[in-house]
Image (spheres, rainbow, N blue to C red):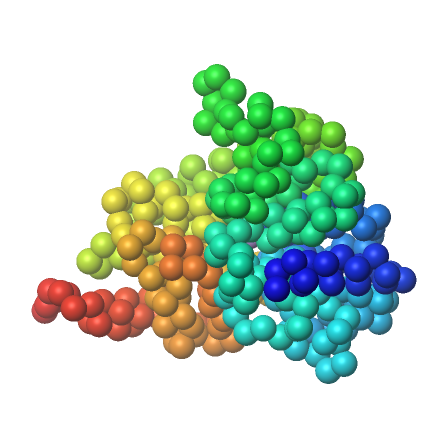
Length: 351
Ligand SMILES: [Mn+2]
């Protein structure tokens, strides 16, 4: 089933008069898009990113792409259903959710694919099939960005690159591919879809992950590091913690809430940390991000969404996000945490 699906997608892309790509702005989405550009001879202008911190594919963006292109591929995002588009959209994703398009390459819908496969590795698998994947390190950047640099699909692609790209140089924590992923992710944390567009240009030109690390994108890393340091210190001091589940707020134009949640989890030894950024995203929405170990933060954020307006939550048990239009996220957190903690079999009384 997997091979038939991949073959069908490759054939459809080769036969299409024109192909447009819609990708998420993170390293997984950007490197998946760059991989498709290489294999199917697309240009950066054929790739679009959701605007300003919006997660998913806005309906009007999908409609616009369908008017301009024969076939649309979405990478690391699942598009909304649209009448008449069923046979013109290829979905390459690894998030759970309903299957809306027959040509969906997603581990949640294709049993042969392991769940911990990144969208970019799936794009790499498709590109590799065509025999036109000249720079196999590119899809690996996306896998590293999602912390999914493992598993059979990744390993197949990793065998095609120089070993030195997969081991950290002496004294360094990250290997060159992980370093490139951090660079691409810094660009979108500071500049959202514009950062992703710049990162795509860099990936399309680069001959190695080293060139990505040394590119003009590197300046975004300093900004992210500084904001993260400041807010992680404050969050560690000021977090509200209930039974190992913590909540903190930041106020930053930079998309750092996920990083601060990660730091808070570790620094306070929590099982779950939720961080709300009170600075509105360029797309107009507010966002909270959660990280956890041994606590379903995706369920916590879904429960929070019930108490907020225009809210949508998604993600995995260990990492999830919540977008909303208005409401009191701290109040929502306390209600949601009470609800989830009261369901725990051994929850001690809080009174
Ligand atoms: Mn991803």
